Image (cartoon, rainbow, N blue to C red):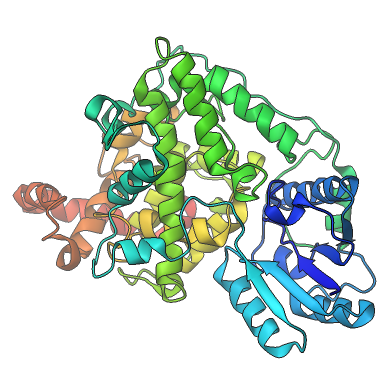
Length: 510
């Protein structure tokens, strides 16, 4: 039966069973579409990375004997819409059957379900054969629970895949080494120079700009640094294990304006596009750690494993358990617009300036920059979760809806009211100074709560707790903050709240 098989831009899995044999009756289709480039304003490096990865994947399939249709943006028959394109191809080529891999985004999943209901030929969906848990597994795991505790799910996956286990118990008897993964980068410490891939992507860049795709961020198309092939991804994984893993856990939360990559793997785009699988990444890193366990502590490898088989699988599970309602949650009823400097980096707050500028330059910032700098500020300032979602989904090279929205609306903004996190992740300048080198050269004074040069994070921190006392005061994880706040002198509290109001009124000029 003449079959059309769809491959989405984030389904570039070389090892999928579809490709284990060549079938002359099967044609694969991969398409660049304005539907996907335009639903938010994406970083130019993000779109380039996906198009480059898709092109290379097509070359791989063709080299292995598979029949492939690859439509670029300017293809004359490209309707720029997934369903319209599929309908056109089925009619033009007389396909008798349609198959697709389950999408990871609710939006596309609904689109393909509707298409299959409407089309006259048989349709079938297949697993993407990538994740370590199923779509709805987490929802079933936490059935009846209000809060989904990541640690429980993480341990479940460790047991199932026998990852760093001694029978039914974790190696050393300890599951989690998070407490050892919170060190500030020493003042004169120079991290390893990151492995980059300088490629000329001028043709792809011109294709995007010529077709009028609206993008954000910066790019040097003659020196594109990101890995976009499986071969490059494996090289980057090897580099991480040999050069970064020994320090990864220790400094995974550290922030500095001097280095953009530190000891992070930068594998997330490769894993999220499925060029690398989470299991192969984890197994390769554990094998390297086991061979070098005298030089690499268990805290380093456990922190990395937890990010991939813990947080990543967990966030996907929350997504499929709670969508589409999750995308509408706004627990604190925040409604402020995201300040313009999130698109320019032009602010006197040094931490925000650096995190935003780095994001614009590299389409990348590590998890603490996202959570405790830009996300922290957005939450303290009362930015609408829709605004925050749009920014995060667009600006980061690894951002796909299933992983972005649960991290942003859940972990970062607490807009879900506590499904993902047990408390809001907010901080004053004290945390920023503890974990970074931003404060020393900042216009604002990290120690001051009021006055012209008072760090906005300080007064906004208390303003946030004060205005949301009805929802947070009884939270056992933050009760101490309310006790401290309530013990403060009344005049001091009033001055702090007045200062916060001034910051909020002048938010565009901070």
